[in-house]
Length: 257
Image (cartoon, rainbow, N blue to C red; front, side, top):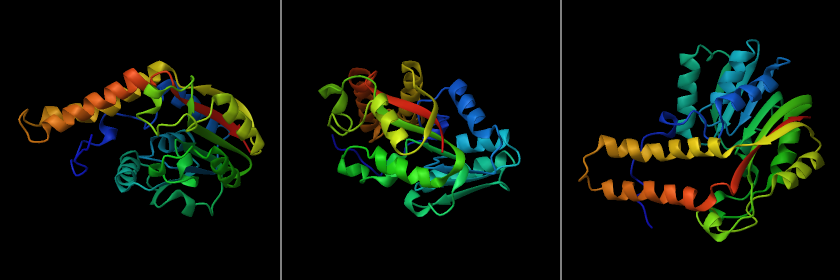
């Protein structure tokens, strides 16, 4: 199926708080881990629109934060939110590839769903290079510092219906146990870890599809692009509900350097 890439859909932040399957309860737990004891510097690699970083800065009022992302719309949103919350004097958001932001380690680091920064381009459909990401992150976490590392995993044995909407390969991701081994090999102490629940995934996927719903609600049913948007909604629903639901997972690790 070929789609019109010029079609402007509503931004994801209008229906998603996080660009990852993450509940408010889990987010609060991650924020507490990063902010107590209070850090001096917080770094978010692949920060998106900066929600988790801004919450850490709210929780740790003496800390300064730096978010890095390669998407200009996300950085614009992050800066706007920092201004709205009165955090612009302590939060800096930089538009750049993550590999260009490795000159300033921090005592609290966030990297969720951004390991591809240190691996092959996503469009190459290669396995995720967790090891390269963890080596780079180890250098970004000051001695004794903390890292919240979240990344995609296989929660169940992959099958063709699950892999087809993704990269189409069984080796794209690791299991949580295999990832934990790589984390320890990189020199991190695993304080605790958990995986996103199916309920967290359901909320995330519903929010992800919400941009299609909002577009359809804002446009006439006979709009030339309406059929395409309805098709995109249905393709995304089927990919998840009939494909990778319960197979593609997200693991969250609280680590010490």
